[in-house]
Length: 306
Image (cartoon, rainbow, N blue to C red; front, side, top):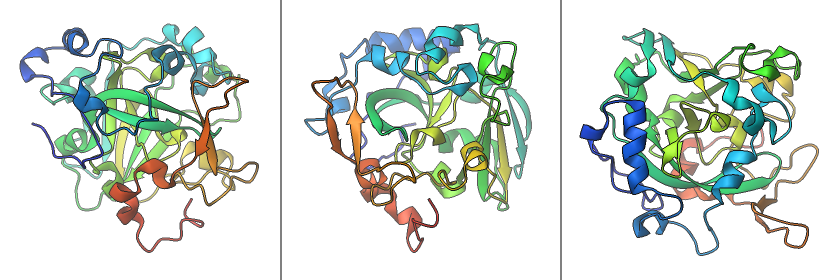
């Protein structure tokens, strides 16, 4: 089904269920409708004139995915070593349906849609990416979370034999990578479980076979290559908060009014950029999605809950 979305979220036509017989078959069919940057007019309608789509080669070659190394080029260089088929996901905690499920079984029959988001990372660079995926709420509802489920926690794959960054290259991280959302954040229409980009299967370096996208938060919140979903009453200690609690909080909402302890977040560098064109622009509260999501945090001190 096509869910209703705020007007600022543009999407393409929904992929028919009859093409959704398997992950590879779906992607092949979806690619016919979303080739390169030939996006339908409706998919561009929500973007300001200045928000041009970031070239695909930048989005797939310039990544943070420390499981493969700390250099931005490491994921594209080494992520091919990660096996993504078959893929299973363990669901646990405060839900009526728990256990280990095949990735294909979880997404089977669910509508995939394309959304173009401004995607930011804490290093003050940003991209505009045509993500393809499934509203996270449609994923989570399958497992029938109970009233005790206040937070949903996610874990990235832990497989040092295929993810060289987990072999001690970035040893200060206590693997696996952990992130979480409040249930109201997880069920918001903007929150997407991504399965592809630019009309293609999601590349390994971008978090295959699926990763989270929460566009009003900093990039580290959008956890990649997810193998575990846990419904819980309490907020987990997410990985970056565990590493550096004074700099990275649980919420990670884009807030240009609050500086990172080591740099300002008042502006961002939109990729592509160069020595002669820094392509800097003001950072927008909630990454430009304040009208849609600010109500989630009404009454909260966003300097304290950062």
